Image 1 (spheres, rainbow, N blue to C red):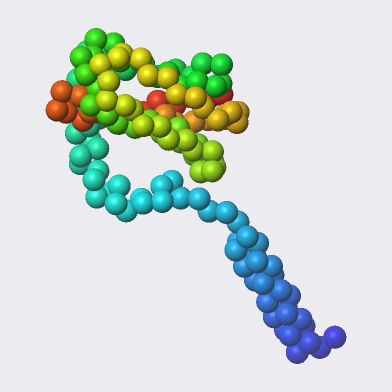
Image 2 (tube, rainbow, N blue to C red):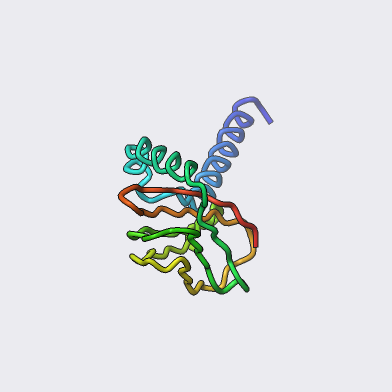
Length: 143
């Protein structure tokens, strides 16, 4: 085999390799951390303020998952929750994320029914308002 045929064979093998590589990468599911990532980035200072407000609380809310079926949010010594949301965020697969609205309530416990959770790591993100201030906490759990 002469040099010309070897160079052409190398180019053909390289082109096939690139074609296979492009095909494999196009099939890969790339879920972003958040669909509106850029809008959330703009609100970053407000998020820091919410976290600082939550850190200053003497009695922080407790979030538990019971029997893999119920999400329980307990607010100790809270006079009035003005609303908010709880997100169960699955870093490895966004299709398993779940979201719940915190209702305006003077009740200290709110319970939500979960879709069955797949075993793995979840991040609980809770944002709420009470007494005119907003708060935010995160908690990692493994099921």
